[in-house]
Image (cartoon, rainbow, N blue to C red; front, side):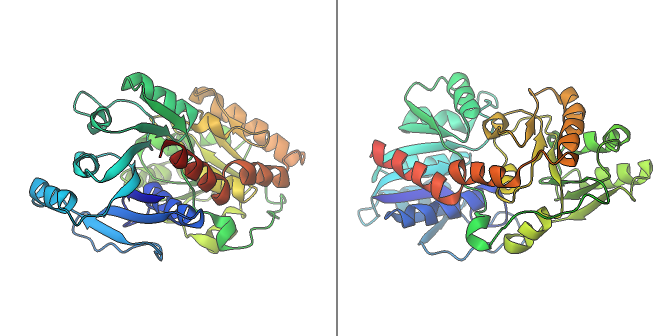
Amino acid sequence: MRVLLVGYLYGRGGIQGHTHWLARGLQKCGCEVEVLTRSPIGDTQQELRYEVTYPITEYSSKGMFQKVCSAFTHQGSKSFDVAVLAGTGWLAMANLLLNRKIGKRVFFEVMSGKRMGFLDPRTLVHFGFDAVIGQAPEVENRFCKEFKWKKIHSAIPAIPDPLELQTKIGQPKVKLDGGIRAAYFGRLAEHKGVLFLLENWDELSKSISSLDIYGFGPQELELKEKLSSLRLNDSVRMHGEYPSGEKYVRLLQEFHVVLLPTIGEEGAPLVLLESMACGIPFVANGVGGIPSYANEDCGITSGDISEFIPLVKKMADRIMEGKIDACRLQRHYAANFSFDSISNRWYDFLKSIV
């Protein structure tokens, strides 16, 4: 099966990681894979994060229609049994719709499924796409409802950074003598709810002894100023970007729990899967596709942020009482969200529609 994956490979993010590892997973399943990526965006130099084992073709917005038509309709262009687009954007959608040598087209919804106005580029799914995949059942259902999608649809998770392939993870061994250590990993943006953690530290600190924040984004300066004004620097610390691979595993396993208090639109955050892979429980606000990650060793609210702090307290009590089973959590990850598990689900789906 010849597969074209359309995503963005430069820089660091969920789409970049998913696109690369899905390519690797489908190759492992015997597929011939090529990736179509937009060339680096902006003035900053961006490099490929991963060592690729598949051919890459780049496109850009310069001379869009002329270049797209030329590149994708001439007689010498390659043909593909199926193409999968991860992400949004008029140009990316147009690339697939103008390529007449693609057998089936699949759109992968990596956001929450919410329609963003009348001119949402995802509307183009109705003009040549054959199937829609949401990264969680909640995302799938919302997309189908808001975009009135009636054709083939399903839910398959995005592939997180497969830490189990990069290092021997083992079980966490962090001690409880200094209290419960919590961490946040992810983008520092308003909808991620990190400010909620700072503003409610008086209550949170009754359950956890410290909070370490890793990531960067548009809210970074505001959070630093808030942290300084509240004089929480001894208990709450900001660290910037976090590492990958083995260093990421070792860092994750320094904590007792990962917190994700998202208060806005959300898909299905991969950091929660990476936390599970390391045997670290999480507490998350149950918006978007997060409820699909539910298991007996983690805590997820109903989507009401007012439930978050009481759930953190409940989690802290379970940790102190030794009721969190890291091995059970890692088995749950392995069975449902590991590299092999998700790769096989994608392969089986694509094969079924081809």
